[in-house]
Length: 617
Image (cartoon, rainbow, N blue to C red; front, side, top):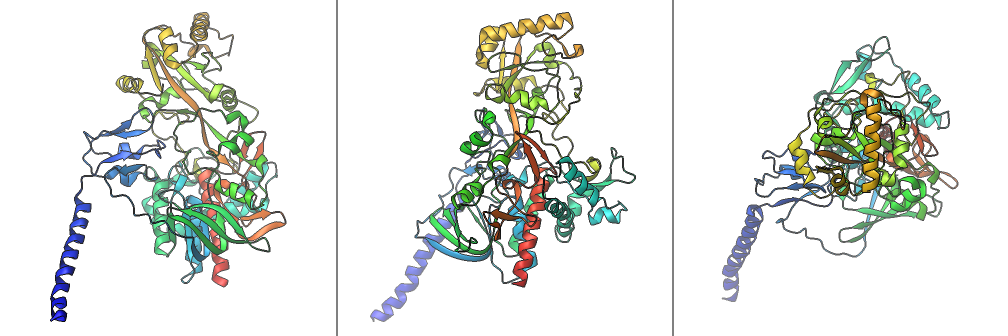
């Protein structure tokens, strides 16, 4: 009888339990989403959350992007397009994180850092090694991809596409030019191997990545070569598309990607080789033993102690959210190497200054960062530069200003007038850490994928357009002193937070020079000398922009990290954490190729070398 009762009761219990589980699952599916932008927001260009919102519910709030919940229709598109997980759901059930004892895992190849170079390395290695090889990527952000989503382009030359179109193979010219521009200080074999990896990457990508949907061949207009055809992107943000396809391909090949896993320590073997990595995960600690390891942790820009040591002139710079300053860019690979006794070359860590960056994430005011007809004052309220000057020493001059920041000041007349084109001033070199790339024999549009202007009006990119005064007024009402509008110069100074006396004197002196038609202070051309006299007056704040702080780990031609006794056989490095693609002379950086191209080339080269070794092991 008891058995019979139990037999009857069991289905009832299971039915009730199943009903509760189904109800909870249904509840989790039907709650009302409430999306918000968290502190991870970096105002990444071109703010895809804002441009992708169907009801224009997202805008700049003075600090980061914000969602107007009264307009939001809860479609979730902003969360989908945010590459770094900065858009969250306030009402989503909290993740079930269970604290645990140390977890031990093993793999054949461990990638520390899931940005562009790390994901490319993992994917090509998995492709070459074949089934049966375990490859793990650990990434401390919520999603893989890192800075690989934000660059403007990849330099591509000597690809199969170009060869089939009859373009001469100029690879050797590229290599020679790169070595010449860097004074033959770099490892020539590393330069050659990395340059040759770029077309190999693209040809490989074409075999599975549907490259024709993203890129196209285009005749170069500016090339001096006999026959030049470059690879251009078909759609905007093609780097985003490439990265998503790389990540999807890695998963197809069985690569395990562990997010919110922050590597903290190398575990070294008795003979100086890498044995594993200690990692902080959401629930505790994981130790992963590996046969091969790649360090691809990105640039060190958010490591304050490293910046103060390597670039003290930038240590006090005003910091705002920008696309090249990911929260994860803390130089973990460099820190781990130092703790493990691996030499770190601090003299080569170098910041790549890129010019003026406007602080609001609104395209309507980006153009104010480079207005030749305006007056520039620093945070002391003093004029500091020839405003029409776009030469490289401009960066060095801005580095010397308090917090590497300034205000562009205009009156109502100058604000609304059409912009005159800037006239570059010839210089003898590239000062202030300018990002200069090698020529082949002339690096022009022929080998560049989307190196041209970005969204209209972005500083340093040309463009411009009419000013949206209402948008300026909206931003002026926000915190952060991004835009200041006032009826008097004294009120404008107070709004900017600069010294009244200095500022009024600077405007008076500038107006006198404008009336004179000759700039005796900074020698700006007379055509740009327009006075600041018609109220209301406008000021917009700007900072010195960077592409990050690169370097630290020395590598050989195969991307193996160089230790105290030479290359460490099973420990590799790629991307911005390495020092192999540029020279640094007193803060002046001359590089052979741009950041994304190096991430692609170095990641592919390291992954190819490791994949071949795994295949034969």
